[in-house]
Length: 202
Image (cartoon, rainbow, N blue to C red; front, side, top):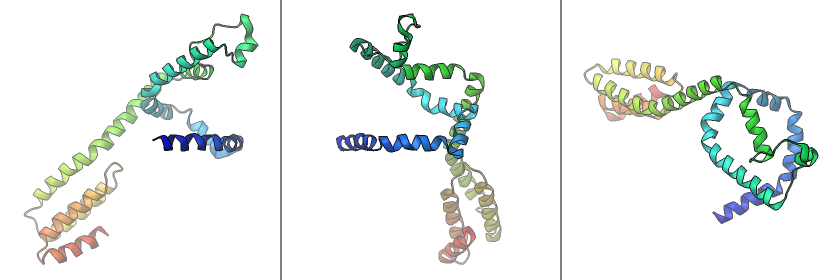
């Protein structure tokens, strides 16, 4: 862990200048501007809320501690120096985090929360689909027990085509289902059933 931390710190320090040059180059790149435009969409912000907001309390605590340490050490930021004594009261957070929080307050939170729910339901569906698929394939295996071998091949091919068109459905269980059913029900033996299953799945 210590070697990994040392490697990360060394890499960040070594590539600081390269990253600064890269930032200037990215601002002139049309693709980067398109990505930045996508970041302003509510569906993208909903994904940020879903994945990053659990870490927000830790970030706020670290920012408050950082700002408190700066005040105790007498460190003043450039914007505070320019404002002087007549400026507004300083936040308990650092300047960067305060700007980020002000930017967050301007979001359309009703739409953002809606998209966060959409993303959470999509992740839940992606997680539960393999379990439901195993139950479906087990039921199909028992339902096709007494059918003719040609009907089994037809149903296996049709179910595979339908399931493969569904994005959350994984592929390996379908291949395993074909191997179990076709090899077991083949009237010419296991070897020929395996060959037929390979050709059908190919």
